[in-house]
Image (cartoon, rainbow, N blue to C red):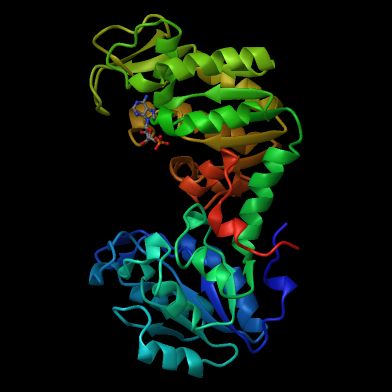
Length: 394
Ligand code: AMP
């Protein structure tokens, strides 16, 4: 267990807090502020304890150069509104300079400032000096609350831990609790649902989950690589050629381990990768040469929803089909609906599955929706996340 902000005395201290304010923007406006609101509990707690709070984040990929379109100024404005108090924005293209140092030094307990996008500095993603030392010179305690970047060892996510006492914020605490409990002490039956397009990325996750779950359900574009491994023709469906052999090995491994690994039994197929394309349902061994699988079929939906209804813990990562197109969203919607209805602990990996749950209006019915796509995937893979392992143990 990692120490949190509650385990140390922060009153009157300068506290550097890494958040994930990498919010989606359109024409200079924030289109979804969930990443900002998710950081509020930690910021409010630190303010109420009398800490001087210095916030850090990245936004987008400015690739080590100051680029105005990636400035965190709009985040400072939104944060000021949400906190009901001024958030001082340190508008420096170098992120840390003499002025920023002066502002930080003058910051009093209960005040909040936000630094400019840490990725304006090329050292950030290399976890390199002198940037880490410059950031460290501003504060006395490091709090990491950026789960979305916890799988990266950068100056502001892991580097700072070398310089000062380092603990987690409430968001990282919550993510680790829900993802960790699901993996280490799940109520059974424990079902994992893996979907999405990139099998290669998810094979290590499937391998780790096979050691933990009672049933592993496969959906989405990766199904077709499994179909191929089973010897079926898949027409124009998405295929990860390099992973066919591995998919076959995973099926064998699951059998040896006595874990139920479910592959779709039917597919909604289309002529073209287009919402308006002609479509039809086919059993998995009958996909025509001129069609492509776009969603799990109705028999698969029935089978999967039945399994979900009996589960006590469910972890879901990756959509069951091309859910962005309404014609092929039914499988993903049905799975989200089955999760919403179930009384199991339901943990949604970030990224597309989180977007799907939001889109179908089931977000408030889930136990936990992770704020980090890549980070939650690496967590489920059993990897150590450098932004978390660097923090002090209780
Ligand atoms: P990933 O990033 O690997 O989680 O993949 C997510 C993407 O997979 C989403 O954008 C889906 O549209 C896509 N996807 C799901 N099912 C299919 C499919 N049958 N064919 C092509 N893409 C798919």
